[in-house]
Amino acid sequence: MQNASECNFSTSDNWVILSSIEQHIKAKIEAVGTPLKDWDIQINYGIKTGLNEAFIISEEKRKELISQDPKSDEIIRPILRGRDIKRYGYEFANLYLINTHNGIKEKGVDPIDIDDYPAIKHWLDFGGIAYNGKIYEGYKQIEKRADQGDTPYNLRNCAYMEDFYKQKIAWNRIASEKLFSFVDEGIFIQDSMHFFTGNHLKYLCATLNSKLFVWLMYLIVGDAAGGNAGNADNVKNLTIHMPSLEQKQQIEKLFEMQQYGEIDKLIYELYGLAEDEIQFIESQ
Image (cartoon, rainbow, N blue to C red; front, side, top):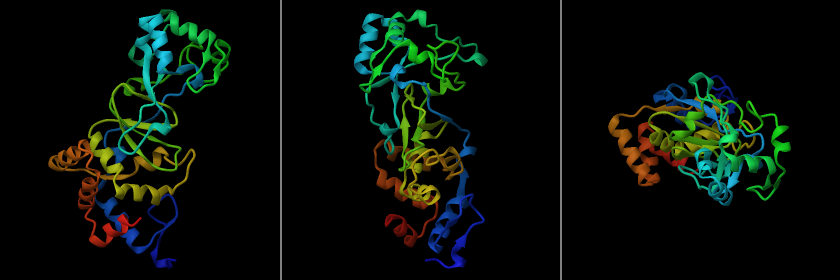
């Protein structure tokens, strides 16, 4: 039990009782870091379909639709679920999104016209067995969903649709364990996740997954699951050390080599942790 002198309620939105060593470590992180929101990034939600059974399909269904009409391949994209997100990377479950997007009016991008994709239209009209073994009943289900675009065939408006085609960092915002995944270009993610694009992604992913930041995220939000577990506000305010070019390149090289233990050591150095502080983090 900590005494009152070890409690600090003035520097956080959440009231957390910290031990002396926890206060010192947290202060060191905040002293040398730049809030993630100031790294020229934009945090967004994953894609929301309103009816996953219709718009998310298996590898087998993808092949079937393309064999019926090769043009179908133009709007079928790989997608990740929250459970596919792992620390540093992801496990692709061979699931795909039918990206009948609603256009981007600000950029003059027209909505997808379903009549241009007859095989996909037939699937959406008549349904069948969905990727998760459930029965998708066809048009009557997509017609009554709330999240739709100009027609029931279209997904809801998404002004940042183009960001899904870029490299990104994604995390499952409703999971109890906070895992940050480096996701390749062209891979979409479901709305149970947040993601951001920008520069320095490998460095940021390495830092966010380091033992120091695993500890920090637990300190901030604990092991809660649900809507606020990985809330964007909790992530965008994390203070991350702005590295020199040499430091960045070193950590990115270790990231590519999957030398995560060595990354942890360098992160401790960047934040100036003392040996007893490192031992404290390692013991958690």
